[in-house]
Length: 428
Ligand code: CMC
Image 1 (tube, rainbow, N blue to C red):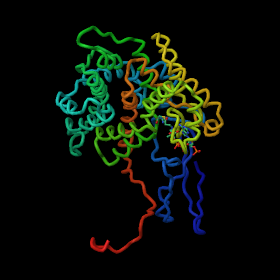
Image 2: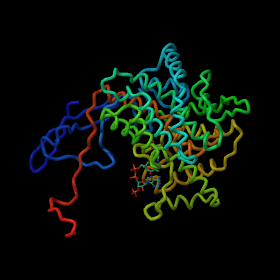
Image 3: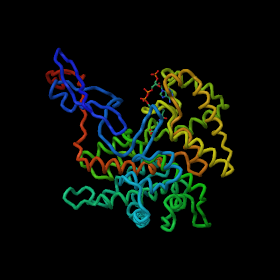
Image 4: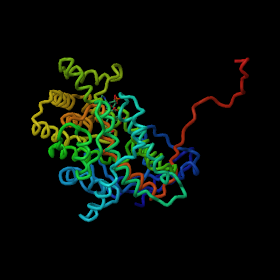
């Protein structure tokens, strides 16, 4: 692209190169702006700031398009396994059968978690939020694999990637088991990725448990739909932390913390709690739509609605809504909050407030209803999101390192006090 951007400041004209991505998104390269002009840009919340060039995920928020490495989310959710998608995100291409078998086998062989990690886990209170536990234990993994932070050790990134994918589901199930007063289950390596997770969640020593293929298939789909979403808050966190050359476990742990927030992945827990509240309050959907419209005074937002980038339907929400219908009817579950959710969506989509602000249901709106049907408790919903997002975080971390990106370090406009004289304690 040959166009130059011109900026006139204090009567002087500056020129900046522009660039274009493979899907024709355009950017102005302001790398030398401050050196040339003394100015920086301010963009709180990074609404217009591209922090990186990435070849992993393409998202068009106006058109409602999401693709991983060029493949549509619709095709992947319908036809791929989660590990196939993980491979695609991390290594750039869909695996051949041989590559897939090798990848899956390596993951199977690393599902067991060091028993000393269990001792750390035992120290958490029974009601600890599973997201806090997960981020702590993923960070603790660096202590068990010190070559992850030894800058002089040979690069073992590939081993750490396998360990993260293999062990995070095992760790994730511990919190649920403890909350039930049940013993934790060890992984069963003859099971596929999703069935193994379900087995660790729901098997009991006293009776046979067979993971339901319908449930495993639904879980596979949900994990794929969450697997990457370009430079969102948690992924940007992973890249930023990793840019200081922090190890992969610490970087992913930081991403888990960012995901936990209710404006990001934590919204899936908030949605079900909100739907339950509406149900307990008599199911008056219009009342809650009104409250959300007056968010500035009520402080209430419709969780699962709105998105920084999607100004059209979130394509993931569309797939998940259909999957929720399918899963509930196949499992013969009648969840009254599904009807409330549909009523809320219907009311919001016809309301001027939501229409004019382009607020549509997002990925978190219907996902919790499926998780619940699968038997996953509310406080584990965001953990499920984290398990799905893991390959995306890994792929983005790996790309950032491979591209030798510089340490992330935004600037600021200082608004504090100018230089002043120190005042001794007895004179304050
Ligand atoms: N309910 C009511 N009003 C809303 C909502 C909502 N859920 N979301 C945005 N608005 C309004 C907001 O009040 C503002 O109105 P006004 O122009 O009058 O000031 C306008 O819409 C724009 O909102 P914003 O907060 O400036 O938009 P943002 O891009 O900074 O925030 C968001 C995006 C996702 C944080 C926000 O829509 C939100 O808080 N949604 C609820 C939480 C949620 O569901 N998060 C999950 C996002 S998808 C999962 C993921 O993170 O990947």
